[in-house]
Length: 422
Image: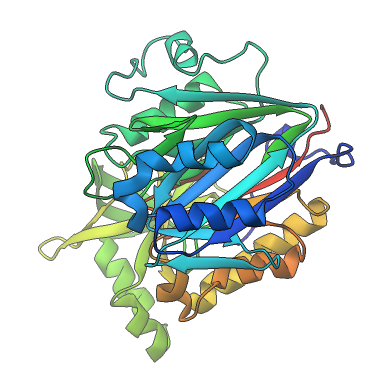
């Protein structure tokens, strides 16, 4: 996947790691919550007071979730506590080995001591959000945000939030300079939310602005490769693409796809049956430029329907005339290749991060790779010592082509690195 232009604050070199910063991690797999907390406490014995504690718990602990933070706070010291329940858990064990644990009990705790950091935790009631057509001040008020912009935002959203895309757009509006990374927490049947904040379980959204000496460096791996040419959208109704063009030739999207299929291998044609997606251009429009959109500027979206009468396709995204699109295929091999390439570029840009957070789609993991620990293994190839923690999400949050989006089937990684401005 080709690189897309990065914001100016991401193009600068990093300074050396601030003195005395540390990260301590623990991973427990006991069936009972009490036993898991005891295991975490043993692994983190001797850790000094942390600035930020990140807690990710498997859905098997859902009924006991309100007990989790009070139990941890009795045994561990941290100024701020943040986390969520997930469909699976990512964590680094006592031997320093990262794991992706799906469909089993798991509790991951990461303690961070960040000298010089400016941390601003927030919790948002998403029941009443400001107007996206109004001023940005009400959105900033939701965060209680300081006037000086923070370069990074960690964002976790409860699955009950009714306007997740509006929330993400509004936070981009409020803090346009901040890279936003995170995901939608796991679902469960218990009568409470899925978010962890302070000593409470919450709904809505929670997060933390991170500034000063530290920031989050983003990597979003969508796990797809393009097939066929780039097309321009000529006719569209909301999310239904009726006609596309390539040069002077116009046809329906289905006719365009049929022409592509004739050039594919038998294995690729088999993948089309269940792993076909559409890349939607975010930055280039044929009305304004004759240059094709770079692959890195495509936002991968589900194809959700076909009209056999006219060859139209419905896409899980609002579409516009002039937008560029390209069909995409996803499989484990492609996902590995893309993530390895992106991590190689990340490695060339920065030294070993203090920690890495992984927000992975429930559709990745063993279901995509055919084996456990697929994404964390690739991450360790690039950064052999980095502690990794995170969660399997119902949707991943991260930037593509300069804007924040809600993704599916994606790995959204946040590398905690020193900030030059710190």
